[in-house]
Image (spheres, rainbow, N blue to C red):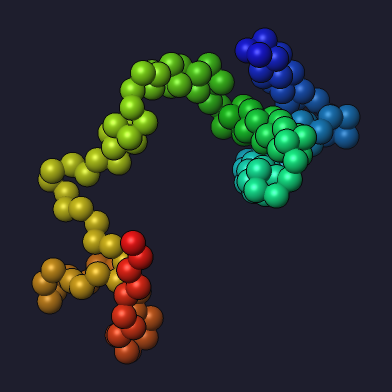
Length: 145
């Protein structure tokens, strides 16, 4: 499995300098990072759709497209795939909840962000809200659970 990804990473790097008319990878690089990122987004959406309403074969194909385009994006961004693998190794054995909390923890010196639509803590607090216009949103909140 790792051999397949290693070969693909090597092929993508080699085709980066090819003529755009001779290689799909080269044509992506010629279009630039925004187009490559867009392709990753498109393939991610197609993967989700295949997971929700397609067959295992559909999802397998879309997942392959997503991984391929993600590797192109990493190459275009100058991020070695080995760095991604090292990050996965670093996270191994760490609770996913703990790892996510470590990335999103708010430093003690900064106040936590206020949820959109929440009332300001003080009259001079003009943080984000969902009010668009002169009338405040007076609709009741819907609570589930």
